[in-house]
Length: 450
Image (tube, rainbow, N blue to C red; front, top):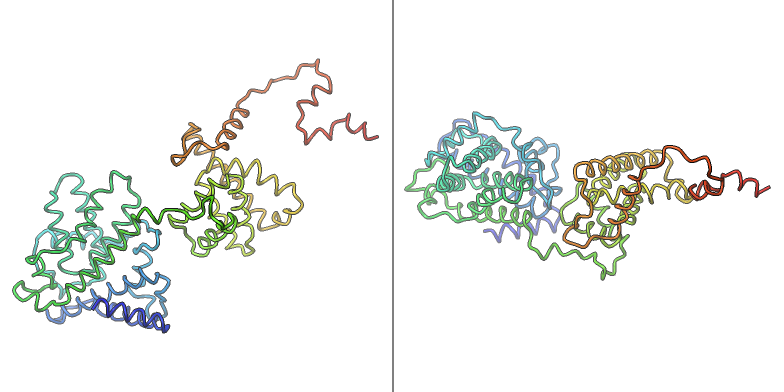
């Protein structure tokens, strides 16, 4: 059946009917999300339809992109249309875990915890509103995780709760895993073990005794007969969670960057490709950051900063320009001190002094460039204030020469200038201390022109 579903998706995508297929699935899912006092059999059917359509929609969003879920006037107010962009991670873009829990109801979370901890097969499906369960279940699991981390419950209790969750509705582990992946993304390395174990537990097949109660609200003796689709739903659930874990911890071989010294693609084209994709999407993934980090190491901070500024200033519309400046400022944080120094000492003077670049200083580009310079300078000073130690190895590589240039510039700024100049100095001695760019304005040079 899973293969048949994949064939249906491929055919729909090839014939341009994927959006129509998605719209029908969303309608089915929306129609079955709320159950109001129906008979047990009808409630079970609605629960299964909600579960199956939710899993199918998540699978489509993962493999064809969230942008493929074209929400029209009929589906834009549906539960799935609101859930998928806020909760489902895509291509390394994770959501704020706290924002994902902002819509939870504490009373409903407590009710879910009571049902999960009771180890009862009855989920009260004739009273459940499944969209509310999907919204509140991550908060319930967060409470379980916190209790586990503080030693209030044992690992056996955690496994029992997670098995209870996935034995009833397969969409619930998907909602929980979506939150866990975003939560893991903001944790330190040593804090990720227990959330990762929760994800692994969802991937572990249930035992025969546990599967007996898979039907929401079903009695144990006839559960397998009444719920023959659990195997297919659990397989689809496992594939969705496996894709989430793959995106969270991709294999090592995909982290190899192709923009190395031996690549035939010019650095400018490589930068243009990565920047254009990130600018059009409005966000940047981990793989693109790794590519840009390699470009920074190969081209150096002056080239990197100058190229990002040119990428930003090539936009005409104000909204695109602001987005490009924000993106450039974010990318400067690959090495904010080096980029800010290059921006102040090399890139900005070129725009101020070169006639060929004067057009880029017209509004609104001039204000955008000034904003980028101020933001970068302030961020670099903040980093230096918080971490005054320089010369640290960057990414396990040897310290590049521009680190030494930065140290020399900082040492030069720390040198104390004398309060007063001794009166015995003549004009030639003063001229030696005058910057070369200002020497042409000295009186002696003016007299030599007469």
